[in-house]
Length: 526
Image 1 (cartoon, helix red, strand yellow):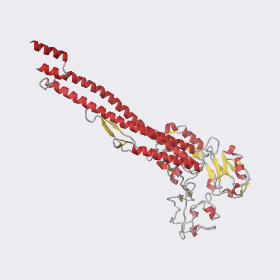
Image 2 (cartoon, helix red, strand yellow):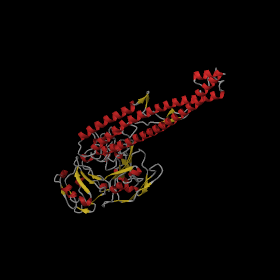
Image 3 (cartoon, one colour):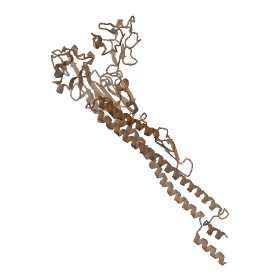
Image 4 (spheres, helix red, strand yellow):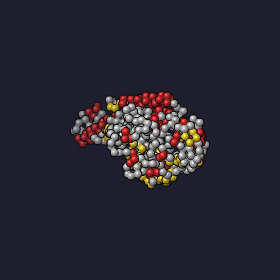
């Protein structure tokens, strides 16, 4: 009967009585094999989730590539405001689609790219807690592209600078070669930026510079002195007209630009603009004439250095003579971390200053003979409504302004270039401070800027931010790829294990037909 039962069922063990210990082992192996089968299914589900996220992010990367390409297209002055505005409209639509992908990509009702898929576990073993964890970072435009912008104060004196980046990789410091800040060839912020940029692949920090000296008002007729010189090159006496209509001043300065490194032009507002393309300083000696409206503290100008880092973290700097690079303890340093979405809207004055939009600080320090100083800026100013500089306050500019930085104002039209003069303010030609009950200031040199790529510097900044966003997505995809490889390897391993466990169970539970048939025949003969 036992042989017939085994031959008819195909099993050696049909009841505990057939082989008590063997049945226990076989049952355990069967349970393990079944659990491994479900673990394989779990692993395949995990792969499906990760592959869904991966393909969605691949489409997002294509969008970011297009955004960067359009920002690059806008980053040249052959574009007009109209065409740049069109490019920005395209970028806005692309960002909307990027966010749409992030917010709608899901698997079985679970959002994958919204930032909520954190430390999700998949059971891929026969015993509890044998899991693989997966995390998919947020990919919305507000969460990626976080880029750090820092711009130092305007440099007004020459010197030798040595920069050290602290903890550039989280552990080590990086020491740059010494650079001289001066008006000579091969020196200045251009040389410092070159030194920083040639090591950017290692440090992750890149540098740009702006060395510009601009008049505070439209050019009026005037005459330079016989000793008028720029960067040590004598230009001499030049008579120029309102708006430099005869081109005398610009032509005289540009006639020696190959030697001085300084190029002159009249901007859209009719103001004189001196630019150093190489990053050398701009030092004006003698007199350029009152009609140029160059403030006295701008007669020696070495510009501003801007730093960009693609991880959004603070740029920690130490070194020697940092004030000659605009990053000293007493310098006004503008800092901001900007995400991809923030580049879509209007860029406020603080962020614009950190990006290096202005050739001077958004706050201008006015220092007197003593320790009295104040920042004149758009917000938090010491010179704002209700600041105490009013009729009978007993305060005057004499404690703040010195001969070196006093601004001569002869008409309200000139005053409007410095102060925000509005109806009812009480400002008029010949006014004195004691006559004003209220005084307001606006930012010097830097203001709110239009969105994204609608300006040249904005386009450059969007290029940096888009590059950071691409890096962010690549890092998330790399993590996903690593988990996919881990899950695939685990599935391959437990598949082999399942086959072997099933074979082991079969050896114990299944009948040997040849042997059992012989036993059955023998029993029948007997």
